[in-house]
Image (cartoon, rainbow, N blue to C red; front, top):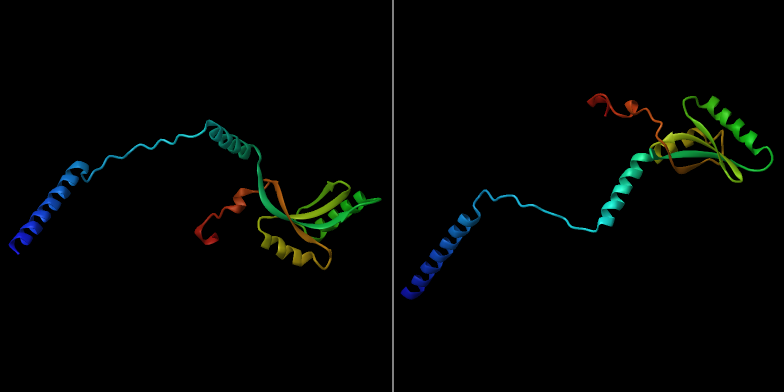
Length: 155
């Protein structure tokens, strides 16, 4: 029994000594290491090209409502007439005519979310049946001051 107690005591002393040795080796203020990532140069070049492209192309994802897709005789005139009707009926909402061969498409709105587009779609559905929401990427011609809240209350 005495031998077992002696072995346990020696084992505990060795463990305590090794723990103290580890604290002295590493200390509580370990120096910060340096991480270097090595990779293919082509990956870095592709990432840089991607960043440059995003800086050049100033577009944002959004939604527009397609009111009509017209083709045939006098479709251009009908499209521009419909655009004017939209502008008169809904002032403050921009309307567009896009030529997507062979059709002239009349679109309305610059909506940031699909929900915003859907709410407006419900307003115009009776007057312009057959309207649908289209995904779109359009140039940033947005007044950013209106987008950013000025105070905490605006959030």
